[in-house]
Image 1 (tube, rainbow, N blue to C red):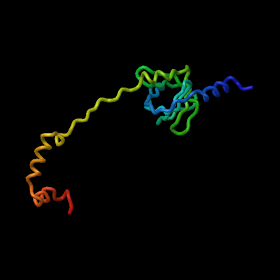
Image 2 (cartoon, one colour):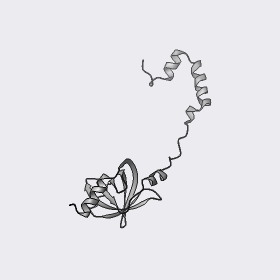
Image 3 (spheres, rainbow, N blue to C red):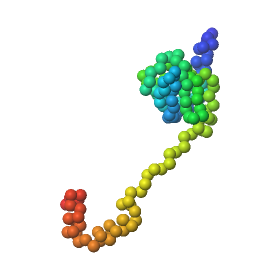
Image 4 (cartoon, one colour):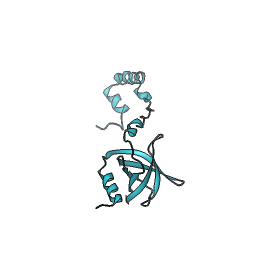
Amino acid sequence: MQSKAALKIEEERRAQRQSLIWKGVLHHENERAEVRVRNISATGALIESPAPFPVGTQLLLKLSETISIQVTVEWTAGEHLGVSFQDAFDLALLVQARPVAAQATWARPAYLDSAVQAAWERRLRRLSAAQLRDEFKGYITD
């Protein structure tokens, strides 16, 4: 007959895991560590953390502005932590908290502007082959 703790661990191991790469923050006392959640289930998660946390440490895992979960470190292996959740986690909350894509900050370079391109095309059409060779000397080899 298995102990209650062994049954709980077995149940957690069987919980449906969702593979993902999700940024999160682990909080412990006055420290914080930015982490990656590699997989998650209703009962726990696999976390990649540059900061070491000993087995048994109680942490707060923040996955978004609205999602924070109390976790306990169950095992460690290098930079990987296996954590269990104190309360069952609803995976549907991740869909609602999906990060919004960043707005594009790219601006079209001036040389791609059609007026600038047209001016270059007019100039290059007027040059002879010898003049073109001289114009692009150093850029094009024969």
